[in-house]
Structures are given as C-alpha cells and as structure tokens.
Figure (cartoon, rainbow, N blue to C red):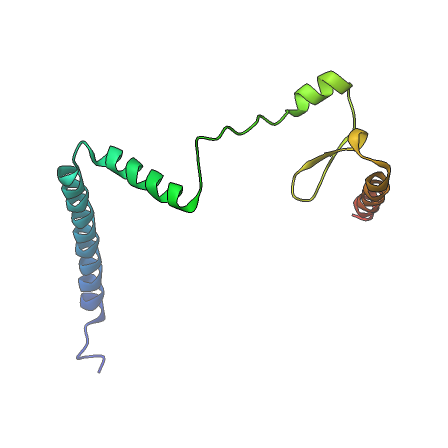
Length: 121
C-alpha cells in the first residue's frame, strides 16, 4: 500500500488545492461586493429608512423620543462633595451617600463581605 500511495505528492496536491480554494473564495467575495455596488441605487437608503420607520410605527416604537441625560458622577460629586462610591458586581456604581436606611444596612453588609473576601485572598 505504501508503494502505491505517494504521500509527498498527495500532500503537495492538497496544499495547491487549498491555495486555489482560497483564491476562488476571495474572487467570489470581490465579485459579490462589485455586484452589490453596481446594483445599489441612490434612493435605496431613503427607501430602507422609510420601511424601517413603517415597521417601527406598526409595533409602536418611536426613536424620535428624547432620552433624558443621566447625571454624570462628576456632576454629582461637584454638587454633593466627594463621597464614597461602591461598585457592584455588574460594574454599576452605587452611591452610599444617597441611600435610605434599609438599603444602607444591606450595602454595609455587602461591603463587609467584600472586604472579608479581599482579606482572604
């Protein structure tokens, strides 16, 4: 069997096939992009925007509504002075100065547990 099969020749043939296959894929991608560019009409973007707006209106979503600006931490610190900010597991900052009594005890408990974990590491 080893005499009948020429392993180096097969390996060379497979490498050449792989190169040709890569070339073919690249040419196919280039041709697809060229066809897309050629078939694109100037009014397509406006038509697409109109269809998207129609679908959003049908399902009741409006993008024209203004989203209020969230206060940044810099503004809060400037108004209230420096205060301790605890970062929750999800990366959300929790200000300890603006919490009510019930949540403050839970926050203190979490801080204590975090400090214990840090000490154990």
